[in-house]
Length: 313
Ligand SMILES: *Cc1c(COP(=O)(O)O)cnc(C)c1O
Image (cartoon, rainbow, N blue to C red; front, side, top):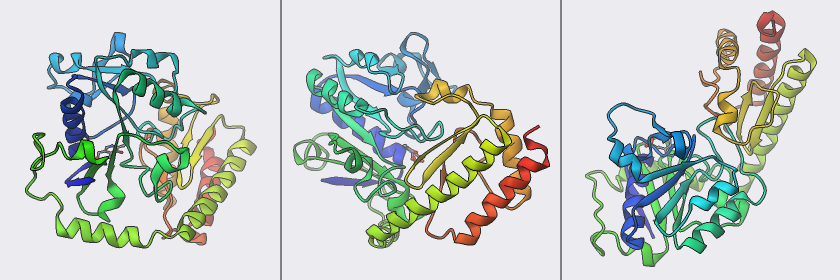
């Protein structure tokens, strides 16, 4: 069953309320660098011993109930004990740039949750319908208890959704006693636009995106390598990030070590050439079927001129 709301952040807020009601526990575990919308209790990063809110105006008491651990850290999963209502995770990190899970990490997380009787929330607001029709969970063959969706499913209009098995979702009002409401929930405009996008997502769309993004990324990698620039391109399907570091990235802390100033210089040079990369090292790039072969070619050319024009210096 699924409930439509108006944003990804609302979906996260409601999913956590539902997990707390179902488990009668209060602690939520999140990962450093994962983003789940403008939700007070989740606007926190760092590690448990030195976590800090990423905004002013968040009461300290609220953060006592949120535990924060590093992504891809198998040992840190020990924190998932019988006080934990749920663990919320972006199965593929997309808000510090793109960082995929290491082999077996999500499976281990699933196991840790099952052992502790905690629920597992996959925040697929970015990955849902982007990595595949069934999102990251289909790719990895894993089932969370609750899935969050947003972005793509609104076709450009405001939307969010949370869903899971009947036993959980029937606890949501009006069938159950977990509050959820919103004047624009299930808005006919957003749901129609979203449906129209989702209906166009045939298998051939994913194959085309995969091939285009793969080709663009390898062209960029070649240029970087020829120029001797320390960089990593992380990619899954049509999502990628060019990280300015020599090192493989496993978590948010690794991403923070990148040369962010140099990234911004590149961003500015590309923009002058007519190629708009997100203006932050920590935002992913996304390809769309609307990008033509000429667009990809131009991107590589402008990138090459930026390198030749002194960015590498
Ligand atoms: C964007 C985002 C959200 C929040 O969605 P909004 O609609 O902006 O509230 C939640 N989770 C992830 C992974 C996101 O990227």
